[in-house]
Image (tube, rainbow, N blue to C red):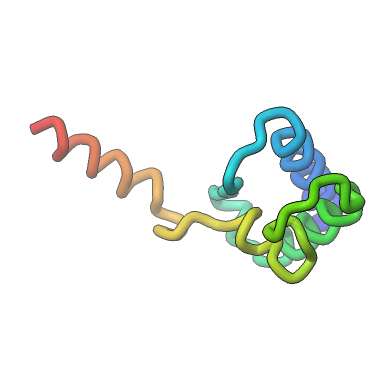
Length: 89
C-alpha cells in the first residue's frame, strides 16, 4: 500500500516539477508521517525523472532537499493558523 501511494505522489511531484518548476515540494499531513512513503516517493521520482532535469537537488543523493516534510511537523496547519491570527491583531 505504501509503495503504491509513494508511486502516485512521485507522479504528482514529477508533474509539478515539469510544469511549474517549484524550488521545493513540501508534503505534509497525517499519512506523510509514515517515513517509508518518502523513501518510495523519492525513489520513484528519481526513476521517472530519468535525469531529464539537470539540477543538484534532483539527484539521488540530494532528493530529500527537494521532496521534503514540513519543518514544523504534523501540526503545521494549526501553527500556521495561529500565526495568521496573531499577525492580523
